[in-house]
Each structure stands twice: as C-alpha cells, then as structure tokens.
Image (cartoon, rainbow, N blue to C red; front, top):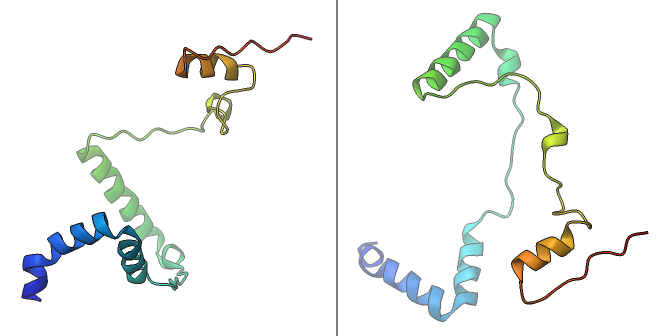
Amino acid sequence: MEDFREGGPQAIARVRKEMPATYLRVCATLIPRELKLEHSQYVKALSDEQIEQAIEAIQTMLAARGGEVIEGTPELDALPAPNGPSPEAAPEATQERNPRKRVPPPASS
C-alpha cells in the first residue's frame, strides 16, 4: 500500500499517457457491472408532521444559502429548440462560425 502511495499517482499518469487503452480497461474494471437499486417508500412512510419539518428544514437551508424559491410553472415556449438552430437560421449560424465559407440563403418559395 505504501508503494502505491509513493509511486501510484505517477504510474497512473504514465499509463494514461503512454497506454491509453490499458488505462481505460483498468478504469472499466473499477466500475461495477450491475448496480442494484431498491425502491423505498420513504416519503410515504413519513407522518404529516415529519414532512412539514423536512420542508421547514429545506426552506431554512435555502434561506441560509441566500437562495430564493421561485414558484410557478416554466414557460415551455421560452426554451431553446433541442436540436440547435432552425433551418432558416442555419446559414447565418454557419457564416458566423466560418466567415470564409459563404452559404447562400435558402431560396424563398
């Protein structure tokens, strides 16, 4: 164990740089193949009083952190498109990233 404390970090760095496939194989062996999760009914088992105490504790922690709780519902139409810019915006976005390559605007119908 002492040998690893003294030379381990340098050995790991060397293997990472010189033998990346071996490094990744070792890293993969450290990750468990299966992760067993058990569903519990923890919150359902709490009494109303315990739930209220938990809510108060969370609110106290948030207040101590200077955080503010925002209530309401999100405006879904204000979120960005999940797949990047629209086809109409694509030529302009391409031109901004690569000013040498000019992309003609889409033909209007």
